[in-house]
Image 1 (tube, rainbow, N blue to C red):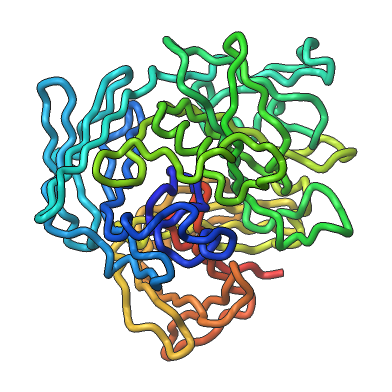
Image 2: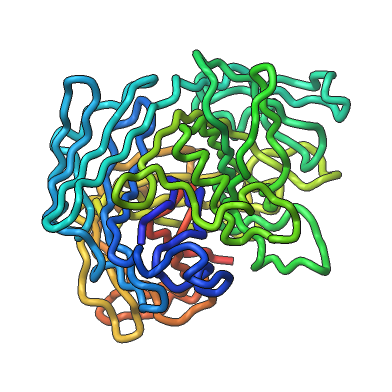
Length: 453
């Protein structure tokens, strides 16, 4: 279920009646008693300056009962969000049971305002929840400090200055664990708390360290911090969660009281003998009247940089870990809910030439998969963007308008699966891969591609 994903899977451990960490690590009665069977579960997060969010509504299942999202989705409810004298009505999404969409989706969430959720369902008391949105959050400076936490070694470039060029900027090339990153904030008021979500944007970059006790498969490319405090308008970004070489996008969330209370009282994986905050709560704090879940809000800003292994010379891009290992590669990303996405192509030549392209995906639709596929999609390559051309992209235009069909293999090593292509028949691509991230930057996207080693 979608409950408590907190955007980039900021809270992946709590699910109501679902099998998984809750069932494995805690008795269901520790969190939910028999009286909490069939409760309405709210999942909605308002982000300042973003459009009104989609709202997921489901019901809890009794402890021990197998959980199925499609069977517990709350349908036919009357849903609205109110702020001051404005009321925003929601309508059910015909494609996904239990998901409700704003009728005027372009309406932006304002900072420092109170928003009230109201859910009316037959034979149930009215569900209400209120959030006070934080003020706008801006990262004014990102500084690399010496280990003394006083001497500034350099100021990194920000998205507000150069956009995605931050990943290639010389100032933003970091050597792993060398120095301390400090984000200096600009905000009109303090939030209840802060959290940091760290996402490695690569798919195949190697770990930044070697350790016989740690298996690479156990490392995550996306991680989230516990609640953090800000002192004198500054927040230190730990190296925790930075395990792989390459580009990193770090999102800083200034969160409301509802979000903070849920995070600090969700002790599903807490060690009860460690004295961790939240241990005294037998049940998370939900702040939802006549239901459970989260109706919360946050302001967010991001920074980006690249990280290379410790002790290695300065470098940029994949040269930091070996571009020559993948001289030819293409990859795609497709949102299976909207049918929108893109396909990128990259090729390095022995002469040093380089061709990097991106095509917009159009006319995407699900098709009958092959016998060995779990699903398949067909799409057409549309608008071409030439990212880098040193004289070897002459035939790039010829691919525009071509239609392709790909499927994810049923078998593969989690989380990476094989890829099939339809060409008179379904054939397995020897170097093809398929990935469906559960969290991080590409949550909800199908990622696929081919690497010629």
